[in-house]
Image 1 (tube, rainbow, N blue to C red):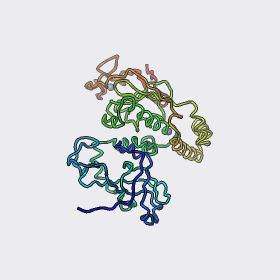
Image 2 (cartoon, rainbow, N blue to C red):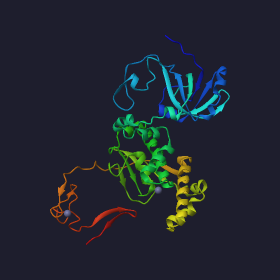
Image 3 (cartoon, rainbow, N blue to C red):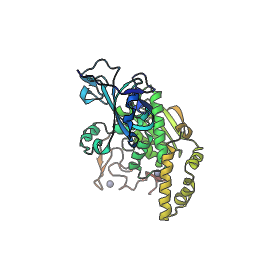
Image 4 (spheres, rainbow, N blue to C red):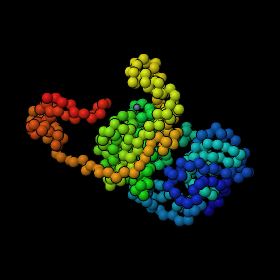
Length: 377
Ligand SMILES: [Zn+2]
Ligand SMILES: [Zn+2]
């Protein structure tokens, strides 16, 4: 048996066991015992710290545990506080230093937790450059990192990652991210569950997002909620409003609508945005310099909007709605004329053995101007 000295105490707003991702959102304070304060020399140069602490409320352990995501895991393959050696470790962000008090975010330790050690997190040593190990995890949990960002209210991370889908950053994409974070939290509350419920659904038609407009807004919604055009989770009910309803299959949902006052908020956080939008987007000015200026301002405006209280941007009300059935699975058919395979039920109405293309049928199209009928004959 060894005995490990403690160097201080942790102050947190959490006194009881809680969801670690919720805990990580809040600030905590590391209070160092006075005799160790000199040991903080140079720590202000470090943005991230590894904090080691004692799970003081843990008094038993089990070698096999219910894993957070799915199934069972051995104690050394998960982060449960109930372990043979009750040491916790978390990487945190250092916000402020005042004497012996270090304010941090990202810590998931309870109030009164004894502090064992603080070490700097150093990218060159601690960053994992070989990403192979992560691949297997993400094969099983493709949306795990999105769920983590959602649970820790990390809108900046979600907007950055949505940019990979959308191709640029703009206020519309930011509205989609904000609506999803705000709306999914409210939906989880309404169903008396935590945000985990959206992870376990795996984005397979259990969560529906009904959007009322097809614009940049829709991509923020698709990325964060996982309800997409491809998995039939995304439905377009074209009212032309910047609104979205999130619902589970029970039809008990929440509808978020962009407030008209947002124009004023946007003008305040990014005064250059509206005049540039008029010139470049509305007026279709093709000047490269102006376009570059617009992109930069749209990007800054999008990130600035994340700082605004979501309830100032969206109204959110509970709604009960009728929801569509699961996507039907019908065998595909081969068109007798072109020989191409056609999804079941999508053959021509004029001749059910041929495709709509070969029969010159009218069809519905969704493009930049919304849903409309393309009349051929
Ligand atoms: Zn956009
Ligand atoms: Zn055909």
